[in-house]
Image (cartoon, rainbow, N blue to C red):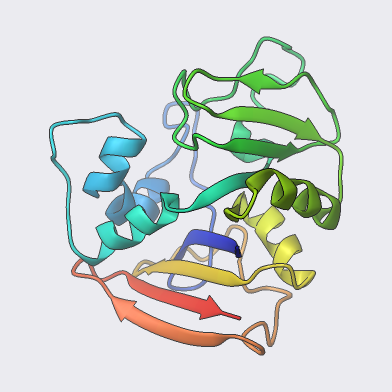
Length: 213
């Protein structure tokens, strides 16, 4: 069992974008940042439920496939679940649709606990007010030997990295410059110490860096 992170960042280290508008709630930069990942056949099958077989293959798809493999439980922040959209609506089930791609128990860290949400495909969202260490202990027990993935967002990931709780960190570095947002590396000087680092470049130009403890 490993505790792992998979994240897309820009060449200058940013994991979020800041160009959202009311007309374009995701902005244009988000599509540029994650485009190589969302173009893969695995993403289209697992997230968009596209069974046509369309999508890119190759190195990016291999990492997309690995993203979902051997995960027994996931931890994410309230923002990744979509809790900020309707914080006072007890019926809001997040923005992942009726069949979220996780298919495992997901622990959502929030200061406002709410009833668990059970989905039809094995995904179960549970809401916790807990520290990273407490959440990880619970997720590890739930995973029963499977990996625990720290899904995001980047602020949550940085907290787990700073606490020394991540065994494997994979970042897909998209060759674009964002200049602002939440920077993954800020405040984590020397994070590479204690890890073996490998690199692989995809056909898309994305550089896949993997830090293994």
